[in-house]
Image (cartoon, rainbow, N blue to C red; front, top):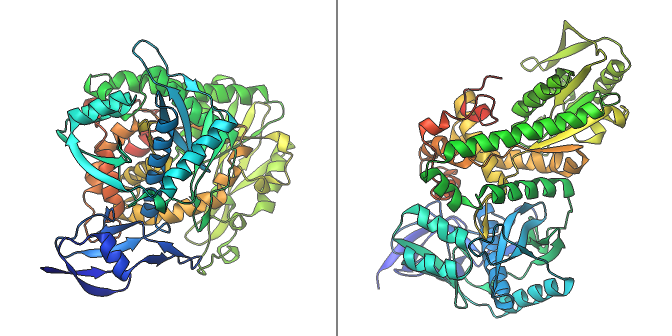
Length: 571
């Protein structure tokens, strides 16, 4: 039998394997587990990177490859686990409620928000939610555990698109059928679990027996599907009931339903049918209305709240949101003034350092909180202060004679990563502050049971903007993203619920818009780059989306948040 020579990154050795061996065969021979660098925990292999492309363990080895086995400690390992767990949930719901449809709607801090809907029928309007009792939730969980205990295998098969569309329509999944129809393909890959056919856009684990850690918890009109916590894989991510963020996501989801854009399939159809400009106008009108709503609340509190603090994760459109909100405040007769929080950094030698001994500019201690609080209190008391400027090259605070005084109609707007952290303004009367959280909280889904990550949405925004404005390559942006996300998890997300108002900067047309700009940038990343795996994943995701044309992009108004990323902004 012919033998093939492969290199395994996990042990740093070359191995000879029989042609046709699967990755699972090789894993059982040379790499049964991977070690989590942080916890030291030995984790089961869930998938593999073959020449930097993600593959399921049933992938056959037919030629020489560079292979790295991955577990739950790797982002693609976690995605593989979660996709597989979603299929188990799908099967449990079908077994218990064959006349209903599972909808995996959007990401929550603790997992995936899911609902069970009555199957849509023509002329029925919006889908009706089936409200589960506590006993029914427990029954779903028990059925999932039974499926996991049986260790059913996941099989990947190909079928014609017409066959797949027929199955999905029969299963009450019109969004999935619409998506496949919009792609214009003849043959499509699907997965089979215990006789049930579905699609999950990426590899699955070999069998349900790999999925021992999960939970479901009632939430809003549905429930949260929880999976293992990153770095602590023996338990699920703790439930965090962040009602304000969930409300923003639900509002976006409801608006998608009202406009008839239930998922990417119906979005693609709208673009193909020439309705892109109509969608752009509707989405921008919604944004303008939300800015006006927040400005109205600020106006109602104008006698007390003089300081507006805005925070949000990377590429959430904070800068544009600050400007648009300021305009709406002006319409109401208020006079917004802006202070850059970056000017309140401590001098470089006082900047705290991280675990690697490098300056940690994102730490709260990197800001001179005493000086900031003192100036804010002076402004509230009607005094005049000299606003500092920070010289980033010299690492020093300077003063240039810029004086600031708040008149009766003036409000102060400040934007920064710590703006929702109460410690930042601990010496200021909280009633004098109004906090706004801005983020791109998309709840648009690929189809009924494949949601779109809000993090992926923001990453695509950042790739496009960084390349255009900052001269940063897509490869560099992808490689820095983990560090960016770590800072958000530490400094922003824990304080989301402190916001007095939340602004969702996601736009229903932005993925077709971003595809036009991001796709050629991602294709430049070479196969030997450490960013190639992520580039390929994003490109495969974008393959499901129909891009806007240049004429349609021209209809995006100059005041749109998206102009912050693609250019042409007039603000």
